[in-house]
Amino acid sequence: QTPGDEAGIKSATIKIDGKYAYGYLRSERGVHRLVRLSPFDADHRRHTSFALVEVLPEADETEQVKINPDDLRVDVFRASGNGGQNVQKNSTAIRVTHLPTNIVVAVQNERSQAQNREVAMRILLSRLVDLDMQQKAEERAALKGEHVSAEFGRQVRSYVQHPYQMVKDHRTDFQTGDAQAVLDGDLDDILKSYLSSQVESASASSEVGAN
Image 1 (cartoon, rainbow, N blue to C red):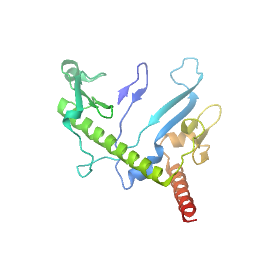
Image 2 (cartoon, helix red, strand yellow):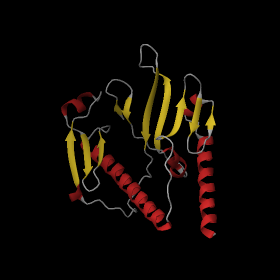
Image 3 (tube, rainbow, N blue to C red):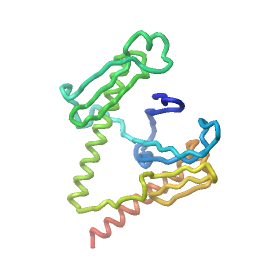
Image 4 (spheres, rainbow, N blue to C red):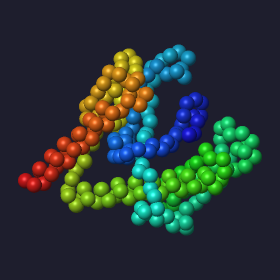
């Protein structure tokens, strides 16, 4: 993770293992909106903040996307934060830029430059696989003549903790009054609601195509 400039967390990468993990959690992709009394505001005023969530399937060597070393620019720099003497004396952090797509991956959490590079390359491969999947999906949609309608606002979900408690998914209209439980990780009902809506949408599209 990367600490915020003043407080909190600026960005973080987590790995989730489990059966159908990507299938369940891909619904979390998008912009998430949080309304709360900020713990970082001495006057305890209400603040609205946004977080962008990316969900990527972990790529392995069987994936067809290949990375050409000539397409990479690798920068080495000193890691930030409290990393001890190793961080202070050595440039262990890695920033990898994939020049054709301009995808940038920076990793600084591991203890050695080689470990950071290995993690960065895995993340880069996952993002390239995800990009390839999106491009193929767009190509299929174009062939079918599908049109994706614009959503209201940019957020896929809102979390409101003040002046009332509510979480609402703007894609499915699912909502619950237990905002803290959702923020603590209770996502089952939200995930099931999204998956059900996707099944219904796919079924409706198939019926239209058959007619």
